[in-house]
Length: 113
Length: 111
Image 1 (cartoon, rainbow over the protein chains, first blue to last red):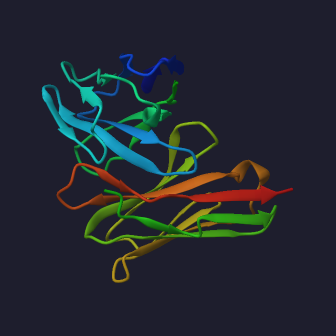
Image 2: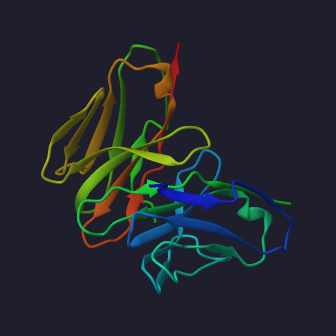
């Protein structure tokens, strides 16, 4: 079991560029989510999904798009990067069958210049 | 939005001492979970306590839950330098898919 994997680990973008952060899980979890974490702060939910074909907005969705074509994958797309999107991004997944804990990926550090 | 609140925001103690962190929340929950985050890494699940439980132990960790006060505490006994990390509580709310996260407590264990 690889758990939750994320790529890339680090990325530097120029303002206005677009990119996709990849996230995959091999635990057959229905729920997947993306968070951003700014220095010294907690997690803020960007988007989440409760199954293939279903996505919804979290607390800070502006500037980001997601899709969920398969159970395993949940990519996060930055449409036009801005310096305010400099952050560490975490993908997470959990089952929805009962009492479920959340599993996190190792994170992607993004710097937007 | 984040509804969990943790205190203290930061805690610095000597190795061997006990560390206590608190978490308060606002709504009805199914369970409350504690996670640890080492610097720059993803969060790792530590312990889960259900709404009908009052206390739970796991190794050097002890978690209590008071649903009447909507609060929980995490006690780490006999702290070690390796316990240095940020600790987050998350509530699994009734009828909500999302976990609601606190802002975290940064724990520093001084050797």
